[in-house]
Amino acid sequence: MDELVALCKRRGFLFQSSEIYGGLQGAYDYGPLGVELKNNLKAAWWSAMVHERDDVEGLDASILTHRSVLHYSGHEETFTDPLVDCRACKKRSRADHIEDGKCPYCGSDSLTEPRPFNLMFKTSIGPVDDGVDIAYLRPETAQAIFTNFKNVVDSTSRQMPFGIAQIGKAFRNEITPRNFIFRVREFEQMELEFFVQPGTDEAWHQTWVESRLAWWREQGVSSNHLSCYDVPKEELAHYSKATVDIMYRFPHGVEELEGVANRTDFDLGSHTKQQGELDIQASVQPNTDSTAKLAIQDRETKQWVVPYVIEPSAGVDRGVLAVLNEAYTVEQLEDGKERTVLRLPAHLAPIKAAVIPLKRNHQEIVSKAQSLRSDLQRLGLGRIFFENSGNIGKSYRKHDEVGTPFCLTIDFESLETDTVTVRDRDSMKQIRLETAELPSYLATNLVS
Ligand code: GAP
Image (cartoon, rainbow, N blue to C red; front, side, top):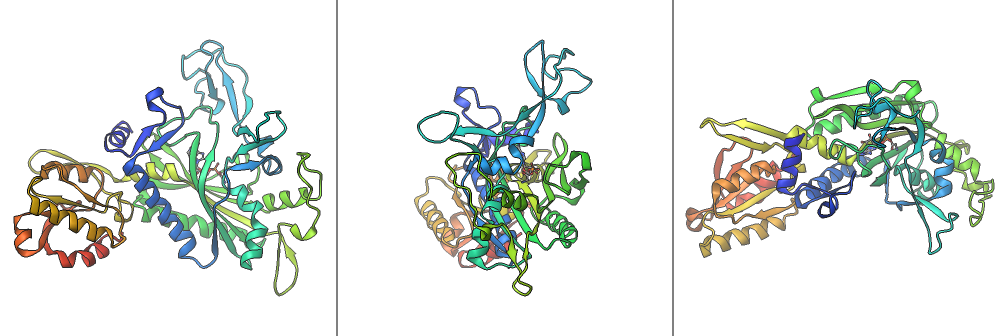
């Protein structure tokens, strides 16, 4: 983990948030390469979950969430972690992170009894903070999918089975954020709520677990490092009938990467029931329109059904950590030297190709490299980088370390023959291609 953290900082993947003021605990900022990697991972998810399927619609809902939503979803009451205080050093810990009854900070065994601590971030809406008009930063993206269920069904005429997908920020006031970006207070989720006929839910649950495992393998995560954990009944979230956690062997241990839950009709049912009742906030008009039920009408039978929901919910940040960890390799070279290489699948690589002039001050070589870079950038394959450090060996080492699949070097021969050398990150082999061949070569080889 330490090596990964150091690489992320050195090469601009991840920085501690508010670092110049000592750092904000539980928050990280994605740097120039981190944002590319993260966007590529999210794009791969969106493509697999929305574009490649014909039964999923997308959504991008607000982060600020009406209090009623999180009241009736059960989060106000049950979204808690057990917290203990250390009487000696006054630090707080999660009760389930305490080993041998001792404070993890100072080792004292003078600890309070566990008490529930709600993880949601509360905020006030409007200029007067009178404690009435409060809202929450969403603790999961899922709730806005449920509250928009009718809007999406009415605007798309979907029938079951179908899903609504969303990627976005979620916030949890974790008692002990730790392990780099594994457990943070501000993170992103990639969530699908897949609505199915009650009775078909268990089969769909299994299907989704398999499909999600396959997707993680496509992101370069080895199946040897993935496993499934059937969450025991007593550990299930309040909304779940069954949950399978997809576990990954992170550098700090085997932990949850994604949860695939069978949420039954808990959420749609709960939000529907509350619509006829008085809302907890006086300013909200109760919705008594019976057609606002979060149900779907079967076109054939005309019956209204509250669907069951299967929810694959993955953490973007945990995903980034997993793919970085999988890709990070330190190799022993024949000459006895070491090289660090990030063997990312090409579709995730932050930079797809680096164009390198052999001589940094040779005008003709530099301008040929610059125009090649712009031509290749226009192909829409992702970021093409102009690398003019002047030291070809250093450039190769840098691009190995950040996972750039191809280095394209412009040398003297390039000026004569309109060719470039193409160096492959993984094999380090070099071939010479005509520049006209590059678009199809890259398009073919950047697909992973
Ligand atoms: N809507 C269901 C839900 O939120 P969850 O298991 O609490 O379920 C889903 O969260 C995923 O979100 C987790 O598998 C994890 O990848 C990610 N996640 C949850 N809490 C996190 C945190 N504090 N930091 C980073 N990622 C987190």
